[in-house]
Length: 151
Image (cartoon, rainbow, N blue to C red; front, side, top):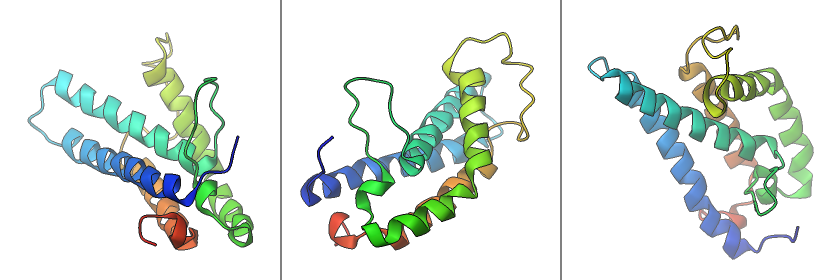
């Protein structure tokens, strides 16, 4: 995979920002008490999808799709910051694994285990969002600003 230009990285910041916006919007909307079940489920699905996209961005997950050209947090880091980034995000490995497992069982696949999922976190609440937000804050601190639309 070829290295991305600074221009491509700056444009990709719009997509990252979109994922963050949709994650938070979905979280706030699914907490509303007057939603009908179908609407609540739609917000949960949206939340989980955007949560997973951002988690894959943070983790540097490789896509199984042959035409995928994923945007990854590492694309924005200078070599000098990669070790610090990897050390920081490693403390969240267990919760990232839980998000992946939960999404696989409850969202991405029809599964007989959907109702009986026994993960540590019940529901799709703010706990997951807080971890993503902490990681994105650290990433924004470490990112080379000349590669973002802030530079």
